[in-house]
Image (tube, rainbow, N blue to C red):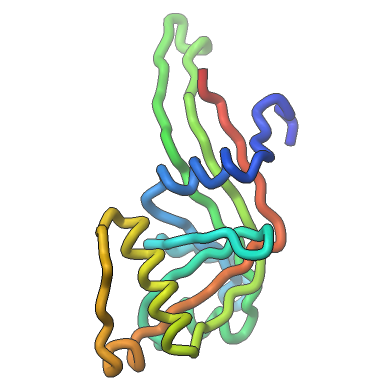
Amino acid sequence: MRRSERAVTDPVEIAGILERATVAHLAFLEDGRPAIVPMSFGFSREAERFVFYFHGSGEGRKCACWRRDPRVALEVVGRNEFLLQSPACRSTCLYESVMAEGVIEPVTDPAAKARGLDLIMNHCGAPGPFDYPAAMLERTMVFRLVASEISGKSNRI
């Protein structure tokens, strides 16, 4: 990172940025080309690693790509604000972001799926508790990404 003074390495600070973020952008390879999909997400810390959860259909473009190559990258932006100055070259952006990478995998155990869905719902602001009918859990795909690498960056005053 060129601006090392902006690095965020404290897991508590990284978690704070993740809590303020509303959308995760997942990057993957599609026939050798990069592709990005915005996703709702939830996260937790498990065994000193950040673990991200996503949900969706088990069909379609992203699932087909993940099955061929489960390596993905993730990016989220917490707070972001432009400070416009005069002259324009003095303008800046106050931001905070997190980037991670790892391998995405489907969650198949119903209890683990429900936990992942709870984390997503909580992150979206829903208070819970939640009840998921067995038939809904069966047809809903939940995906899990254990971050093998994670870093944060912030330019907040």
